[in-house]
Length: 105
Image (cartoon, rainbow, N blue to C red; front, side, top):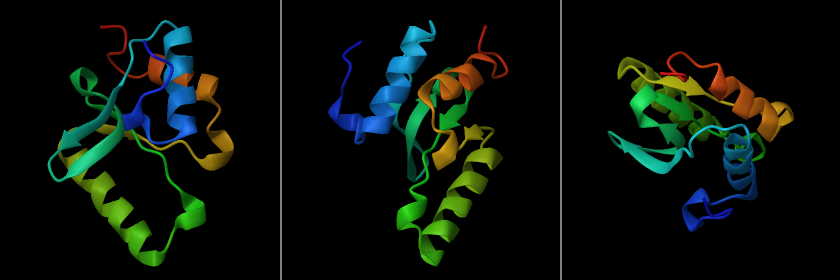
C-alpha cells in the first residue's frame, strides 16, 4: 500500500491508514460513496465507516450536517466510528477497527 494517496486528503487519514496496515488490517477504502455522502475511510464489507471531525472548523450548520450524515449511515446499517481530536492516535483507531464486529470474518 502506498503511504499516501491524494484521496486521503489529510495527514491524519494517511497516518491512520498506515497504522491499520501495521496492525495487519486491510487498507480501508478512501472516499467511499454511500448515498449522498463520501466516507473518509470505510470497510464496506463490514459496513464500518471512520469519519474524522474537524471540530476547529465546526459551525452550527456543519454540526447539523455531520449529525444528519451519521444518522443516515446508521439507518443504512453502517457502524460509524468518529475518533475525537484528542483520541486520533492512529494505533488506537487501528485497535478499535480490529475489534469491530466481523473484523475477523
